[in-house]
Image (cartoon, rainbow, N blue to C red; front, side, top):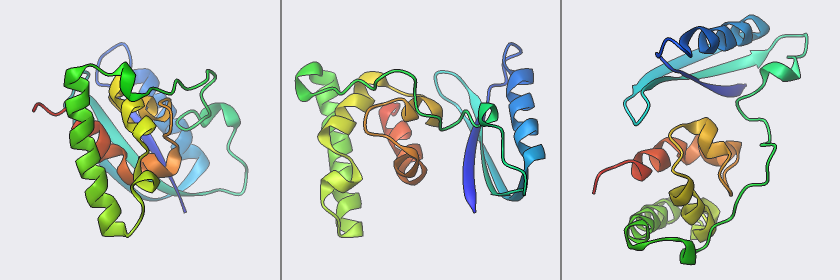
Length: 157
């Protein structure tokens, strides 16, 4: 079983295109389960997670855009790149990371490294696709922690 995330932007400029991507994908797989949630952020969108199995014929590479490797090199940020407000946000995310690491009996860097945190704060992704282009974030980390990370990045206070 595999998982794919789509973001559907309700704005008239994007809606038809986003729906077309989802429909083409649905035609190429056997859907097991779906979940959808409206995300009210800087740019509102519907986030759709699809659990699926592949059909016998392989999926064309051009349709698999959600988690393709970015064409540019991801920028790695350090503590020195952050201002005071961003350092406060990093402190809160590190506290969250410490709790997750403790719950999972893992070292903190296995949840998020400091560079991952600093890079996410500097890039400020609004969805999974943008988070995937941030240094340190791959498919597994996003599937496991992406929603919480994006929420923390955009929370007030």
